[in-house]
Amino acid sequence: GQNINPECLAADNMHQQWLLLAACFWVIFMFMVASKFITLTFKDPDGYSAKQEFLFLTTVPEAGKSREEKRFAEDPKPTGRMPPAAPLVYMERLELIRNVCRDEALRNLSHTAVSKFVLDRIFVCDKHKILFCQTPKVGNTQWKKVLIVLNGAFPSIEEIPENVVHDHEKNGLPRLSSFSKVGIEKRLKTYFKFFIVRDPFERLISAFKDKFVHNPRFEPWYRHEIAPGIIRKYRKNRTETRGIQFEDFVRYLGDPNHRWLDLQFGDHIIHWVTYVELCAPCEIKYSVIGHHETLEEDAPYILREAGIDHLVSYPTIPPGITVYNRTKVERYFLGISKRDIRRLYARFEGDFKLFGYQKPDFLLN
Image (tube, rainbow, N blue to C red; front, side, top):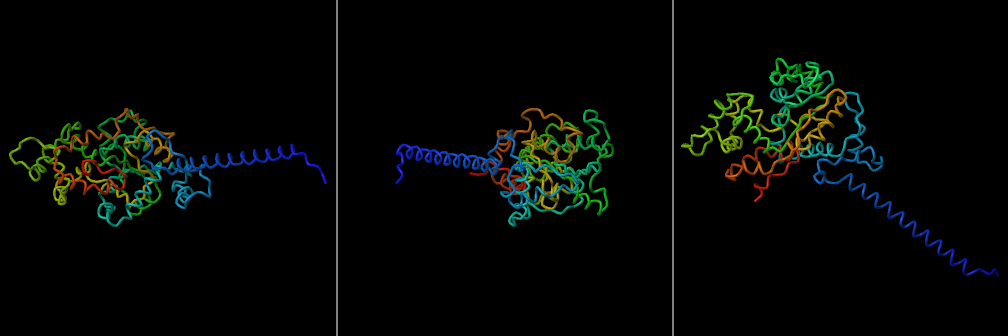
């Protein structure tokens, strides 16, 4: 027989072992890359800092896509532009709304009729096929300015006089309610639709301060008509003569029978009714929901998605202004009875759940 050199055999064996080892390393390496990618793509959005960018779904291999993601990517925007696939956070916000809207236990808190009250809140930009639902105390003035410029009433945001922004005779911003039934339905079906939210309790504090404490726009009716109405019905201590306190406001908002006062106050209630009552998020299929807390990322994203980022930019946001101020919220609720805070939460629970805001700590114990 043939003589086999034992040295050759040993070298051959070594060669095979090295190949095997290299293959193992390669497999492990690929697995690490894959798992890193998966955790990055599907990680809970709350784990991200506001600054971090989300991975774009365009990088996900086709086979790995869920049916929902495929539908989202293939569903062209009604305006005829094909959008880049949305970063995960914006899709997750819409997914959360869909899930909460389906929750029968929350039905009364999440659903509302698309009434004239809702249609009055939605501003129209026909030129660029955009609908914006106004949620007062969430940086709406700036978005109104963006739309006023897009509608061509003024050449730039800087040139819009402050008194014109909220003057609906002069600002060139039609409301959706001003169109025919067919016109309303067509726009709701085909236009890019968005609105902005913030922590519901922080928004109420902002509304209280703006309307009853500082009142910078000089609207005397808040202090002279609305405040006395609330005090008469909700002040615990009748001998207390101070102006309206946050506690009176909380008791009014948390009262299941607040509606009869609301009717007397008319449209002024837009500053403190729920996002559900203002924008009907379960009935109207919005394209994007922005969060005040992450407005620095959300504003450019909205302009991009609406296809108007080359025409206008959102005014600069002063640093720190949109961050949730937990200390302020806790300070305002200090000394207000648990019962009153629970009733307030019960009314705004739909907003907390729909938009992923946490129930405040001081309600958990």
